[in-house]
Length: 163
Ligand code: ZN
Image 1 (cartoon, rainbow, N blue to C red):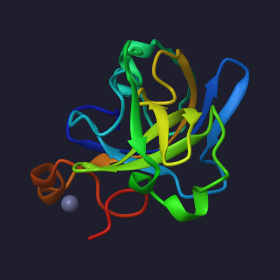
Image 2: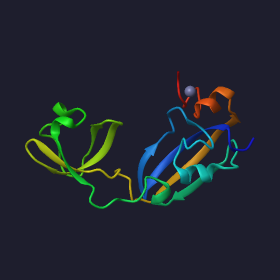
Image 3: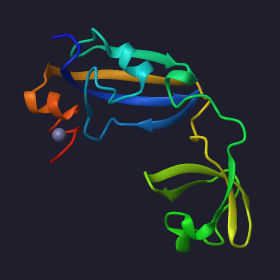
């Protein structure tokens, strides 16, 4: 069976920024996603179309189809107490470090630019914004999605949503 709209695929991946390995799912459960429902980044979903079980491939994804381009003027000053795990982070933050700010829509990854006593300047671009990324993918399985998965807009079971 080939990956297409309303199929659920499981896959293993390695993610690279140039030669630098960022993530590797091998050794863990594979990821599961429902194709055609924006479950994964646009550039990766396009590359998955028509692949089938056992296929291995490498795909390079431009920034605009991965985590987006970097936005200018995105440095914000935030109180340190608004950071996730603020107590543990106090006196340990350095420029370049990735931290999480608590926002109304959940925790958001930001990069520390400058640390003050009570405030920290952070770049709100995603740490991987503006980067061309490369994935090495191995398709583990492809199946038809259940009606429930289609209604929910995501995959269930191992590697997917558990509820
Ligand atoms: Zn669900």
